[in-house]
Structures are given as C-alpha cells and as structure tokens.
Image (cartoon, rainbow, N blue to C red; front, side, top):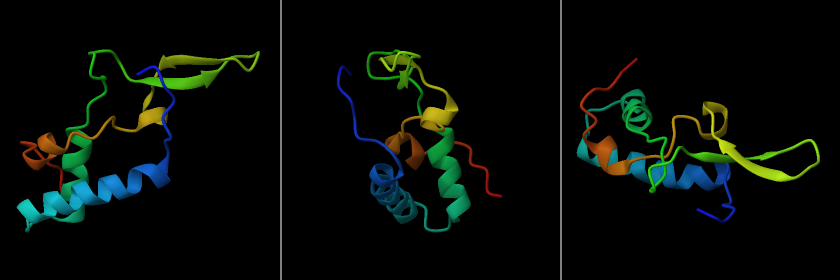
Length: 93
C-alpha cells in the first residue's frame, strides 16, 4: 500500500467481532468454532493488486524493509467478510 498501517490485536478485534456478529446473524445455528472456521478458511493472502501480503521487517542495520508475510505476521490472512458469509465448508470442532 505504500504506507504503514496501525496493526495488532487491539486494532483487529473490533472489526473481527463485528464481522462475526454479522455471520451469526445470518447463520444463527453456527457455533463460535464454525464462525472462526468460516473466517479463517476464506481469508486471503494477497493484496488488492494481486501481490502476496507484505510485513515490515528490520534488517541488521535497523532499516525497515518489506518482505513477504508469513502466518506469524498475518495469521490466516486478511478477512474476507463476504466470503465468510458463504464459505462452502466449515470445520466445527
């Protein structure tokens, strides 16, 4: 994107909670595990330009670089709310 985003659990939690509430509204019989599965299995790992998600990393000289993100950087990826409403397959553990 060309800019640094504020990220982390405190920024993601309200957004994910809202999306989870919308999924629960559509699928009232789904468990929390099923909702989590829908969110994770429909997440995307590419940006709007079709490139892999990037993560900020610091080189040995403390210079910030962008590198391809790993699951440790972005979890399952960027949430795809529309896809999560109709995921096709969910894992309800």
